[in-house]
Picture 1 (cartoon, rainbow, N blue to C red):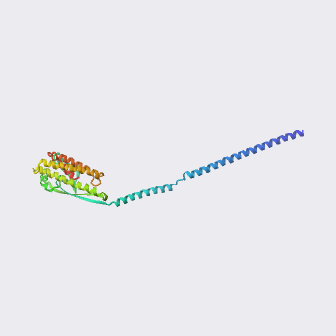
Picture 2 (picture 1 turned 180 degrees about the vertical axis):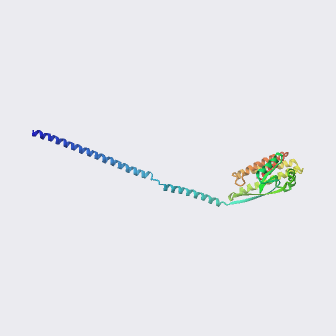
Picture 3 (picture 1 turned 60 degrees about the vertical axis):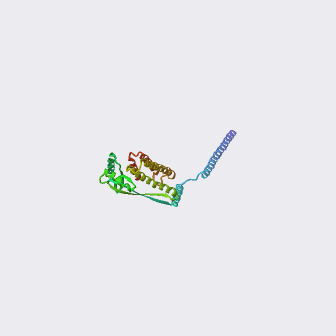
Length: 281
């Protein structure tokens, strides 16, 4: 019986020993697994941190503001440099003084009343143009040659008995860069010459009406004027394509050419109205 008990105890001790060995192995496996897991995690975290640092550093709001300020300052510096360059190119100014004449048919305190009066004139086949100077003046034909005053006076008096002579003093100021003076002077001289041509055609037409100029002579004068105006129009398109000297000068030449073309008919005096309006451009 004692032997049986010893054998039983030995078996139990053997099982316990085996269990302890297995438990120890399991604990070692778990511990090894934990060490491996956290070791790998630590290594990966270290690599991520290094890669993040190398690829992109965190951008703060302050750094963004500083970059924006630097860009803004650079643009302002460029603008100042451009302004300095413009200042280095001095501007020149030329005044074109034009003395014109017209008979005043009426004066009004409001543009509406002046336009109503002008509308009535045109409905009766008469011509007028509105000039704003202190008030709104309705003028008849505008001309440059004072020697034509008697003719225009007769026309105005037939419309309004108390019409009176009004002198128009216009000053056209033209500014241009000093480095473009040569072509600017060409444009200005052309414009002054064009105003003179208007006066020549008006004078020629009245001479024709008074039988002091033949139809053929007047037609020749008009054709010559058309050719001059067309050459000026082409020149201003080449020299002053941006209209920096006298605004819309090319379009003005084109309108003047059309008025001269109308004048070749001679049966209608409406071209005189067109020339009056172009004088006031």
